[in-house]
Image (cartoon, rainbow, N blue to C red; front, side):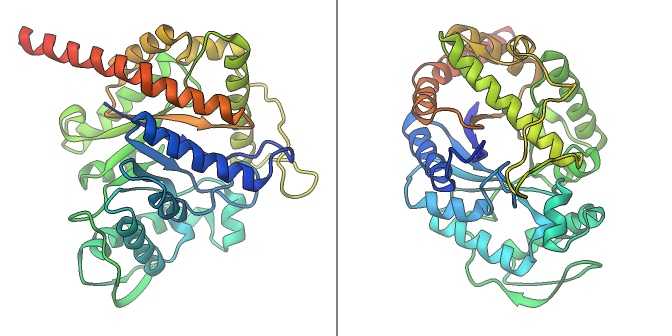
Amino acid sequence: MEFGVFILAQQRGYHQTSQQVIQNSIEQTVVAEQAGFNSAWYAEHHFNNYSLSPSPLMMVAHMAAKTQRIRLGTAVCILPLYHPARFLAEVGFADTVSNGRLDLGVGSGYQEFEFERFGVKIADAPAIYNEFLDILPKGLTQKIVEYDGQFLKLPPSSIAVRPVQSPMPPIWITSGNPVALGRGVREGHNLFVTALLNGNAAISELRARLDKVASDNGKDLDEDVKFGFLRCAYASDNQAEIDAYLDCARFQRRISESLKFRRAQSDDGYMVKEVPSATDPTFEQLRQNLPVGSVNQVIDKMLEEISILKPKHIALQTQLGDFDQKTMLRQIELWGEKIIPAIQKELRRHTKTSEVAA
């Protein structure tokens, strides 16, 4: 089982400067490596405070110089907002300067607000995304690449900076669309999924959907597909600390939904108002749904979720809202010191027990 940190780089208000938000992202990555995490993941969003991470590949390149071991992932690059020639070159560059530590997460995007400002119709996003998936393996493995699609055109071109990883960096597919996930399964890519802030029932439903996607495409989910699980989780004996984390997680949900469903409000065209929703979960519901509580409670809940979903990777959301940075750095260290080793020990024990029984 691998563990990563997922860094959204949110700005909950003007009491946080953009410089502080980005610096927090940098610090969390460095501490995550020191704590033994396998990966750090960076989002991509534009034009508002939901996320101040406009280029995950730039973040990967920057963090490559500040780390040695941890893998650095994009979660995700919104492919319809790129030109393929530049994207291929920057992927090669990021993998090169990180010495082959790039995990390339890609998606089609969902915030129409962003697409409008890039001059791209969101209705065309699935088709553009699929053309990008045609181009990526060719451009990352072949000396010359060309493509003549409906949306993407690339005359015969040589990408100068080649990836270090062979044959190419791992591609991670993020989508709620089973067709998109199915293509990822068929082509041997990894998947990245989430149950948002929901509990075991939603995780069970997610497992069933992934099983169907794999079987519909001639694969076994456990044997043939590597997939990661994005999760909010927090360990503390301090209830106020847990509530502060849950409050930031709920903030993320509110802003994301308001942008997705085109109901976002702003007084200045940038800072999105946090508006409560009729579907907001209560803190009590979140405590029941999520791995939060004491160290032992979090370990037990994580093991329960792992037994249901059986992911190969778990990415913890660490930078949410305006959660206190020093407290979060201590949390990352706690996961590295106690929680991850305990989970991995129990998983190894369970594996050995199963092997003996077989």
